[in-house]
Amino acid sequence: MRVASYDHFGISPPRIMGLGLLASSASYLALETSSAAALGEAAGPAALVVAALVFYMVVSTPRRILDRQRLSEAREAVALAASAMACLSVTGSRSKTLLTLHPRDQSSALAIRECAREILLGFPIGRATAESAKALVSNSAADALKGIASMKPEDFGSGDEESRGIEISTDMYRETKLPMFMTACFFSPIMLVLYSVFTHTYDPVKLVELVAFEFVIVDLAFFFSSVGRGPA
Amino acid sequence: MKDELPVIFALKKVLESAGSGDGIAHSLVVELRRMVPEGSAVARMILLGNPLPVSLRPLAESKSGEISMLSTLIGSASRSSTAMVGRSGRAFAAVLERWVRLRENVKLEMKVQAFRSLVTSGVLGAVTAMLASLGPLVANLNFIEGSAPQPAGSLLLAAGCMTAISSGMLGFYMSGRRFILNVMVAMLVFGFVSAVVSPLVDIPSVALWGIK
Image (cartoon, rainbow over all chains, first blue to last red; front, side, top):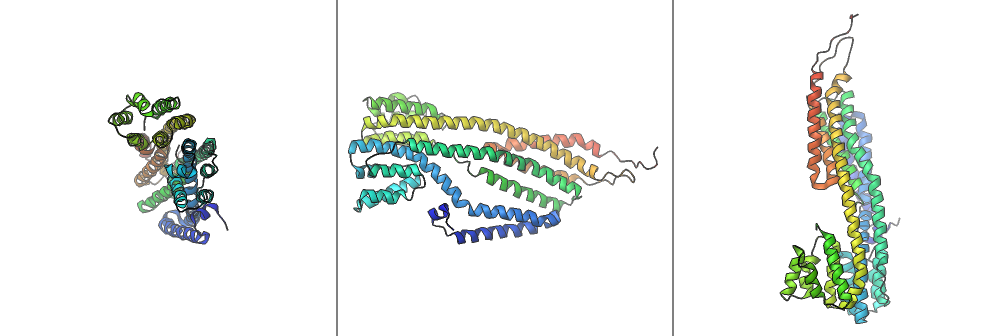
């Protein structure tokens, strides 16, 4: 199985799947034991749903980190292309330009530093930039870096377009997830109060379990709704 | 940073004047000296004779990514060409300005959503208070033998906790640290509704068997 985000971070899929299974099993056992008294027979299926969500949460973590990194690099690509354009037209030297650039984004800065190191070691600039560009997730950031080697600094419009696209998709995610989160927050306490009323659950210990279960539900909903909000 | 747009405009003007051949340090002092606190700090450092990258540090270390990017580009003029940085930077500044405007729009939307979340928290408080107060009474209604009184105190407390958790999370999602407002609104409404409804719960139920 090949997953782009796992490949990028060098994570082995079986290992992260194992980690996900471990986390989901732990959450299943914890929830099943803690809410069995209050939820009764419903505790098993509820814990199963929570365990599935925890599994997804763990295995999708690299993808979320990658998405955030992509946005950050795409924004940095604009600055990178603008400063490369100015520097290249003045110095006329690709190596000097690469050695002068100091991006603010951490992953872009790492790629440029690696590229500069290879240039100082005597590698051809084309190879150095191509190798370093592989570490970048954003296409426009990679193009901006390769553009320096080809003496044709990329127009920073591509970085702008990419970050705009990511922002639009982030907005759409937000528009989809907000009603879901509001529904979870609004209806989970109501449903649990109704549950305790109709099952005549008035024992304080069982009610504490229900409160804890509600917290787990709302917390998971919060996590899934916050994913992809990114910097506005 | 609170007022990003004026600083972006000022830096854009600096780039425009640099593109037309003026000195960057002079333009920075003219444009930024009235902008407190970062702008005036930059102007003061330039007038004290610090080099451009050092003087621009307050802006380069600013919380606003756009201002930081733009000031880093202006600072790089000392290593390349002022005119070239000015020329390439004008379009760059326009892109950053658009980003900042976009963010301002998102902030306005978030304000509306924060208000919506306050309303939702209030409604949630009312509904859960009503359910927790009247629920035990309604669930145990027995018109033949009369209802046995149910201890609803712990349920009311649990419902209050659930309401506080939900409204707190909702507030945190919508308005960050001001989630406490949501919790306060929800709990106030919850307390008010339970106080209004509690006399109904205390009415003794009468067995209707045999009443014509």
